[in-house]
Image (cartoon, rainbow, N blue to C red; front, top):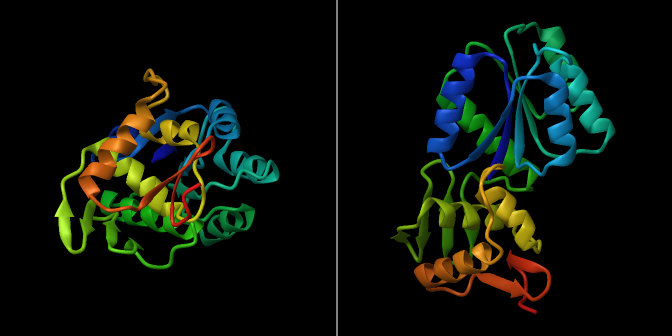
Length: 221
């Protein structure tokens, strides 16, 4: 899944990026408020981690503009200014969660998983479809209770489809969440990856909707 990190502190950016990357996320980063607003307005993200204290445009203004534009991705707000009034203002403006600085990276990961899960309509921390179970915390996939060894891209693909179960996801959208913004995207990369993942899972869980994309939890067309 592709995450936008908006943070101007170099150390925090490095630590959060390393942590998210190790957890299987693709991370885009912006330190400038106006650039971050533009990127969030034009790109497709699974979630945004948004600092409030930014140059050129503060995080609260960005948050309000995104929600006014009906950008619906979940937003986890970070701020060193942890007053209750500011938290209320952030939540009222459309933030999905609020984490004051300093914070533990494990808590950040847990909160990120939770806002992504809730935005997709999942109450349980484990994602299930039939005999396939995906554990986002452990980055673990089992079929009929047997663990499956997946590559990072195979895991990202299955995770994105299971988070969006019941919805047909286009190849373009999948490609955006499998590779970074500056990586070259081959035209048939998603198709090849889906075929490889199906063989590893050895179960009919990913449906092809010809001309539209792929889905988990829908009938094949």
